[in-house]
Length: 96
Picture 1 (tube, rainbow, N blue to C red):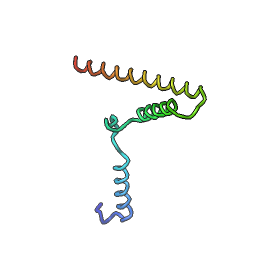
Picture 2 (cartoon, rainbow, N blue to C red):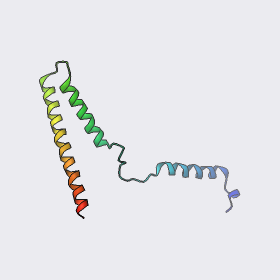
Picture 3 (cartoon, rainbow, N blue to C red):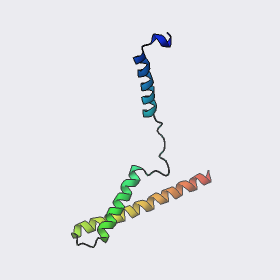
Picture 4 (spheres, rainbow, N blue to C red):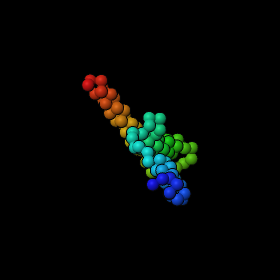
């Protein structure tokens, strides 16, 4: 079947569907190193929010400040554990 035998509308439709397929089909891989993941953005947002509440010059209810302090503490512990895991992974790669 030659190209001239195919109606123009079908030829255009095929071309558009190929373009759409190229736009929507992307390979899924590891996140880029310079782009923050959703987890990192949430963690950073919570850290900033807790710092703002703790350092705010207005009087806030004591329970809000206590929650912000515990949140800051938990995020600090989480960061320490993550950096420890990263360091151990680096040491394991060097030993192999």
